[in-house]
Image (cartoon, rainbow, N blue to C red; front, side):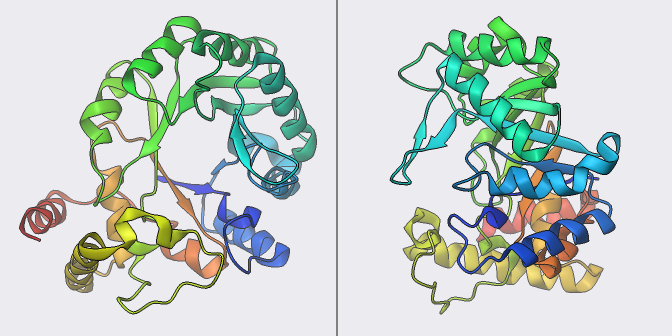
Length: 297
């Protein structure tokens, strides 16, 4: 299955109104729909809410699931998220994430982002040490450019990367995904639905509630947002003829790209993940149709 449930939305940091009951119901719905890969991080929640929630579901049947964990970002006491790639911090945070989840290892452990104040080689070596000690089966790096990926790989190898990719933002295809895949790394892409904009649920006159972080993104403003709405309108027309939703087509386009091995998709309610759980790669005709509309719009 192409979809990886990203647990950031249910952590309740930037998602307005998320409840613990909704979070549990969303994870349960994802599992019932066949999703077996989940993505968490030490900083997903002010007190590890993401780790704790997913651990409730994975402890009893650990081998049936793949859990991706990340360390290298954390919260200050006044709730500001900072990058911290010091080896001692990475080690402490990975161990704490596993304790929160009640698990003994991650299937994939990733450096959440390079720390400009710490040599990347030191952070990579710390992640590799945790792999060697059994806290992870495979390792990788997120939010890195191609040069940083190569630096990480030179020290520790690189089994996986995470980077943005969606219909509106395609730069990573040539700059990172294809070279990483050529070196044997799995490529998990995020922002596939661009914070819900490419799910077809946000209208032109949508008013975001106070505290919602999405309006600060450039793609939600001015002509870029209007172009996104035109693309969504066209996707809706395409989907109506083949029985696929706008969200399914958006994810399907991403996982159809060479080198992409999975799409991180967030959800805060069961109905949201049930709409996208079975999104698969597109047939050649539909893919060509979407590529043409992107060129025209």
